[in-house]
Length: 186
Image (cartoon, rainbow, N blue to C red; front, side, top):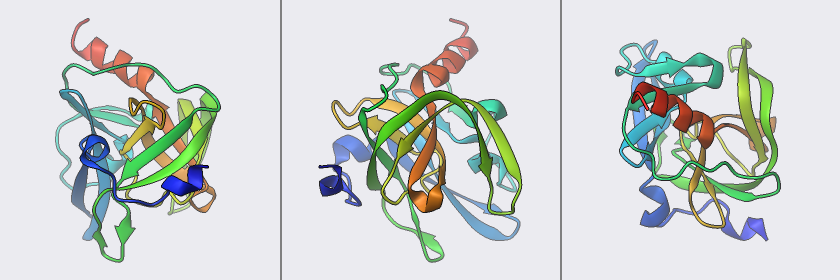
């Protein structure tokens, strides 16, 4: 049962895929995650665009993806509907992030257009996103990795959560790989 793997500190084989990202945003502390896809590094676009001085990146707002470092990607295979997945990120605890943790869920929809409501009430529309159930994904998971619970391959990058953490909206890995391949001139 999925609940047996919820909210644990991941072993290095899983946590190696995600780095903590912090920045200052309007005088406040903002937290997110960066996903390592082989030698390429990506995050959710909104993680960077919220920063006062974001690092250079190629931003694709329609998929909520920012490619920080170009490079090779280990494997580009999306998750299937019904596939169990793990979410790795840096949830916020009070004013500071804690170490990477894992949440779990199951993919319920793939390649959908979604509208996400932000904390300030503004709505964002994204194309080609996938959706999975979650136990308690929270702020700070954005930009983190979505991994197959079966073989631990990265299947996407977290964009947002909905329903109080009961749903995770993410960009599928094949969309990200296509963007990286285009940047690399492949």
